[in-house]
Length: 157
Image (cartoon, rainbow, N blue to C red):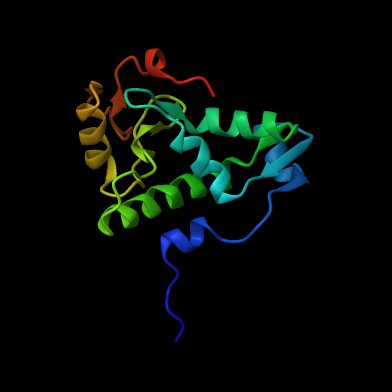
């Protein structure tokens, strides 16, 4: 039986970004044209650039990558998966004793909500954001908690 890949191995998987036609099933949501399928390390690199006290959204990541690759959109599905891989790899690095890890907790959903799929869930993300001076608004209904006035803290990419 083959050993499971580490998150770091998934993050550093040898692959090239791909540019494809937007699939018909996604056109209603993202429009027509060309779509980038990024590589995990491209997503990780953008997250690594987020300064202490600043935030970014997954939407900003997608827009920056689309602009850099001169395409209409970046795939929202793979981008979300790669943000998660970067987060899990960062936690692996932390467990190995590394001090400087990818600050994935600074990545929010487009509406400022926290991300349930990060290591430790929204509780762990909220704790780290509070340590950096952010206020967290309680969740409403099924929506996860949100960073108060998150727009003021968005870093330009």
